[in-house]
Image 1 (spheres, rainbow, N blue to C red):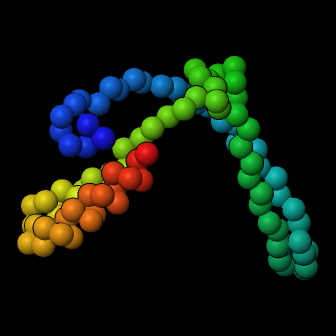
Image 2 (image 1 turned 60 degrees about the vertical axis):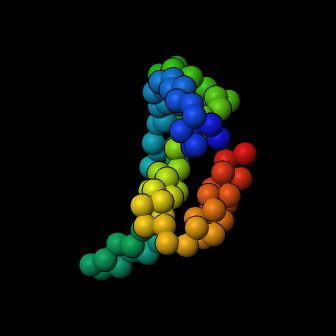
Length: 95
């Protein structure tokens, strides 16, 4: 919350990389004289050996659309009540 109000700077820590192996599988649905119909399935498996970190890591990211919207409201604030309501909504969703 202090970062959002400008009274503190964010503490940034680089994480990762997190590596996932992609596996593809095709299932043939129909074969005719000149057509083949299939469905492709994709799955992703976490590769622990190639990753720096685990799936248990807690990561917080910036909600860029909310920040941009809030900034737009601040710049164009004609209705202070609307700004305060939006700010309250954004700050409560980060808790």
